[in-house]
Image (cartoon, rainbow, N blue to C red):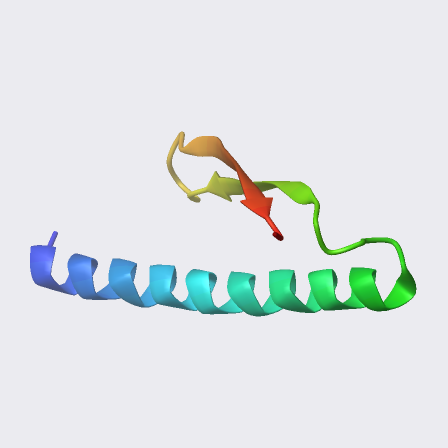
Amino acid sequence: MDEDVFNIQLRKFLKKVGIQSQREIEQAVRDGIASGALKGNETLKASVHLQLGETDLDVTIKDDIKLA
């Protein structure tokens, strides 16, 4: 394995995940507030399920996102 190539590819993947996740969450919250489903002062439970093909990696990462 080439550590440099692996590191660059991993960072590229994580950047893509981070940017896309942020956009999706922001839009979901805006839509929820616009529809009245959210008030804007909630704490939302968030989770991400991470799997890596060809390995045994299967983990769920959980946290809360406060809106106010």
